[in-house]
Length: 103
Image 1: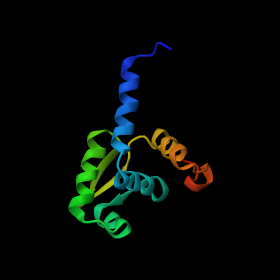
Image 2: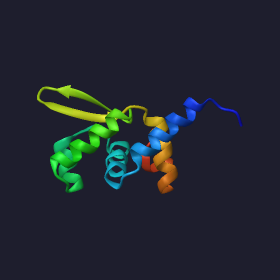
Image 3: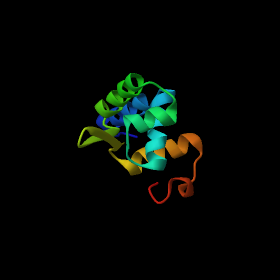
Image 4: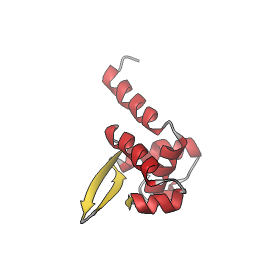
């Protein structure tokens, strides 16, 4: 049972980043629908742009999401789709078919 403490810290950081209902909604939406910008998330989640942006900052700082710029828009996607999809699928009891071939 002796594993590197860094591995435990990384997993704990991932769980901590996901430990908010809105962040879980954001991540699950990115898993199911792919890359999105804040405006799209705002419409789908019925939350304000500042609120979503704040949660995206936390997810990005934890390495859960990554951002890419396209013109004036910033699009967000998962940093490690396979790992994050597996964690979220386990939390919600989702099947691979619900996420396509990404889980």
